[in-house]
Image (cartoon, rainbow, N blue to C red; front, top):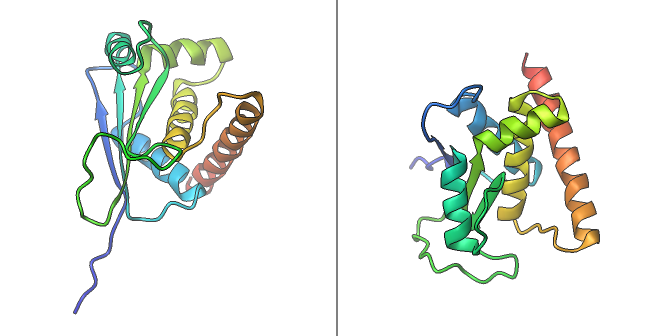
Length: 166
């Protein structure tokens, strides 16, 4: 009897025609690398959406009560305290982490501000969003420092992995 080999299920949606947006495959690879650096196994599933400012603002207003655009939103399937969300998880053995939504225009603006490529800024935002899905937060000063250090470490690991592949 053959065992079914589970693979990470990373659903990428690029909402509209966005200039300087890497391919869905590139984005999926970044998410996968983040999950691997954090010890998440192949039985994980999450969604990533790259969209416009208006959509992010609408989601931020609807789900967080904040009527302004932001760079990244994370919608967890489980909270950091282990409470389940109002969504029902299917009994398929997968670790359903949730959704990360990134504002492409905000990523472009932040990339210009930090003098680096848009792809790097998107990677930074993906890392940030995925860490939130894995239960990390930055509400307190110590948490913010810890999360920022983890983000830098993961970004460095991903860059090294990309260089090895080239």
